[in-house]
Image (tube, rainbow, N blue to C red; front, side):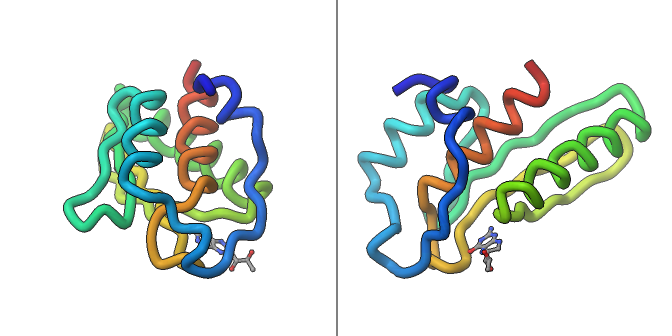
Length: 112
Ligand SMILES: C[C@H](O)[C@H](O)[C@H]1CNC2=NC(N)=NC(=O)C2=N1
């Protein structure tokens, strides 16, 4: 699998622990996503994005939000002037599912 394979998939309803990814799968998927890291508890992936100004930051947030609504999978966003941290985790799984990696790849595709 490459990043393009990931970013062209759509999120599926994934509920329950059986959809939680193992450490090896997480490591393999993270290798496709430069700059993304798993959190200390291994339950989310995160990346900081930097922009020239607030307009561009807000444009990014809106694009991410539009994609997230279409995929019905929603990130935690933390933003300020010229930066936005995007965090993906699957609440319905209590950790990381493939949906988080699909959406991280889709965020990268927005900026490509
Ligand atoms: C019913 C709906 O599909 C679910 O509540 C979705 C919505 N968006 C979601 N977003 C995230 N990040 N995790 C979820 O488990 C989740 N579940």
